[in-house]
Image (cartoon, rainbow, N blue to C red; front, top):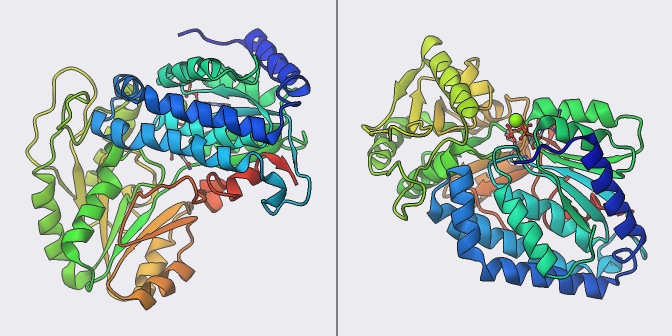
Length: 426
Ligand code: NAP
Ligand code: MG
């Protein structure tokens, strides 16, 4: 892959500026909607190709790229196509204006989906874009560039720059960019916030998380176990909103743990291109090292480690599904984002204790609540400090629903009407 340097960043930003001041800026909302619909349609038509490419590049199971990543990416373009000609009715004043050139930097865990989350609202609002995919997963963004060309958007409207963190840094620092949208680690997010401070650039940050998935004793336990599995083992746990801390009420803790272990014994780990695979590969050596180090820290700090019997392929990067019980709040595995298939289990006695433990994190992206009681769901949801809260389900996504965090999980929302706000001068 080419490593875009400062000259390439200059050229991409200049192309985006020319398109903004030229043909794309002159395109009506109604016509922008047509382009976005067209992109969505072509993603659907080429869905198999996108899914295979995504799994090859990222290592995620084909079942997930086929059933989740690609359909949701298309859905995102469909959804924002619907807004493009209705911006004056979106609640941002009678004549909301685009910002100009948006610089967008995305991570490797949902490569095409994150590109869609960034590009669709920006284009609907009338901006032009320069997007940098992650160094390890640029392929579907490049195929998307081809699709956007096929859809006939004016040259320069969308520019994709491959490269590593230095390319991202150059894009963020470029004076010709009006808006920065970043999804990635909290560490890099803070660096970007410092770089952008005082420049007048608008900024949205979608960062890490350490979500609590809270299971009460009256919850439908079999359903909850499925939700726990989906919450932390979907996409190998490379999910910012993963339910990585299981908080289970003490009276049912043993039952839940037993059923969870039995269920994990049935998961298949291996070839991402096999339709029966549940758990695919870890994206990079770097990520595998990080997961391995944090899991070792969990053991050293005294938590009990368990994995099902599971043979790891000898080529590639793999980590077995892992559960830590006897975790205390001070443990690193209860505080730091592991971003891998590792679940930390803590217990609680009362709802008040559940809230206190769930909120005991510098993050605030998501949470899950499992209970039969509707009133308890509302009581909990009012007290949990998280941008997204699921009740009796987990990891559900819809383009109409805003997504984003509090505290060290960032600010700004993607998806829904809220997702337009980051791309409008309103
Ligand atoms: P990362 O290291 O922060 O990288 C994210 C992106 O930023 C990549 O494209 C990266 O390039 C680039 N980058 C690295 N250093 C940069 C710099 N100094 N200036 C500008 N750009 C820079 O994160 P990651 O490890 O790839 O992704 C995992 C993290 O993303 C996790 O913490 C996860 O929680 C978070 N995440 C959050 C959300 C959300 O919506 N809140 C969604 C998905 C992921 P390279 O590819 O070369 O590193
Ligand atoms: Mg990185």
